[in-house]
Image (tube, rainbow, N blue to C red):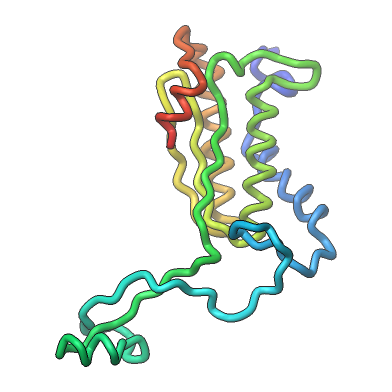
Amino acid sequence: MDALAQPGVRVTAEELLGLAALVRRGRRGARLRVSPLSGGAAIQRQGGGLDLHEIRPWALGDEVRSIDRNASARRGELHTRLFRDEREPRHLVVVDLRPSMLFGTRRAFRSAAALEAACLVGWDLVQRGARLDMAALMAAGPVPLRGGVGEPAMRALAAGLARLNDEALRDRADRDPPLDEALAAAT
C-alpha cells in the first residue's frame, strides 16, 4: 500500500467538500446572523447596506437612477454615484503546507488537519455569503487560490487545496521558509 494513501496523510477534494455538512448541521436553527463587520453583534439584515464608492462622469449604459444631481449641477455635466456592498468583505484563509507540516500526529498529518480546519472556516464563511480567497504556504512560496462567493467557489478552492497538498507531499522540499516570512509574502 502506498504510504501517501494512508488515512490522515492525503486529503481528497471529496473529503474537504464533505465538511460542508458539518457546518450546515451546526448552523441549523440560527435566525440571527452575526455581522461580518467589526463588532460581531447579532443583526437582522435590512436595506441595501451600500457605501459610496465613487462619483464619476455618467456614461452610456449607466443606470439613470444613479445620477447624482448635486454633482451634475456643480460640474455642468451628468455624474453618477457608484456603490459597493459594505457587507461583503473579502476574507483570506491561509493554509500552511510547508515541509514542517508534513508529519503526523495520532490522527493525521498536521497539513491534513490544517486543510480540514481551513475548509471548515471556508464553508462557514461561504454560507454567510462572504467573498472568500485562500492561499497555501508552500516551500517554494505562497500560492494564491482565487475564490469568490458561494458554493461553487468553495468547491474550486477545496479542489485546489487538495491538489496543492498532493504536490507538497510529492515534493518534500528541503527548504522550509520561516512562518513569518511565508505569511508576509502571502499577504
